Length: 276
Image 1 (cartoon, rainbow, N blue to C red):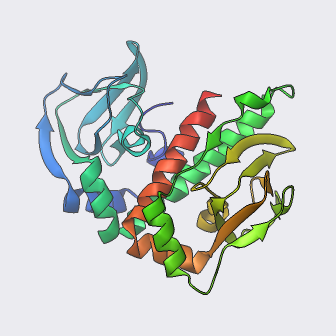
Image 2 (cartoon, one colour; image 1 turned 90 degrees about the vertical axis):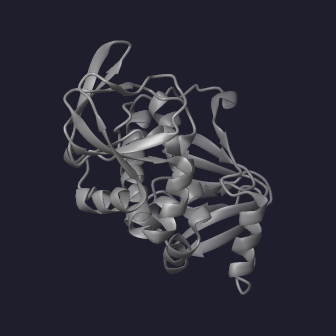
Image 3 (cartoon, rainbow, N blue to C red; image 1 turned 45 degrees about the horizontal axis):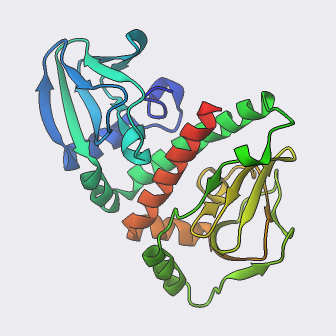
């Protein structure tokens, strides 16, 4: 999976280069890169993302060409969002002007430009839906339970406390073990935060993920307003905080930690799904 992944205009009808350009110009730092100079190397820590203002950048993996990133495109964001090492090497194919932004600057900039966070969420979700569909096509029906990924702590305790205080009239809802929370193919009205207990996520009757306290699910349908991609049921007695779309959009615009946490969780889920 390349570092470009979800912001290439030709690959995504929800990517808007002008939104990205304004976001990086307002918050990043411009610099010139000579032809042949590296921007980053594969298997190194990803701390910076880039907007290509002019020129072209070649992506390679193990010395083999992967792609060419052109002006108006973004690269390097997957590692920044997921915290995982770079999956490719980026080298200036010609003299370039780039606008770079580190992870800490990005985290603060999202609050000033929430539409950029929403755009990234929409693109991540579109690619995740595709990755899930491809995973199901090649799914081994005899997959051992221990291979099922477990996720949690998308939101830390401080953020969980903020969320519950933001919705004092909406206490967590109790679901008994094996209770169905949402079904694949339904319209999505809420996203859910697991306060305690655990939740199974299934696609076509195959369990693909187990969500622990601090984890989230159901956010995909809120962002792209498509039908549910999976069924969720309580793996144990659970209490869940439900968030509707209006409250979700308000949180994206007013609470940068909320948007950043979701972006990180989706980027990690997309990488993990892609590996399969």
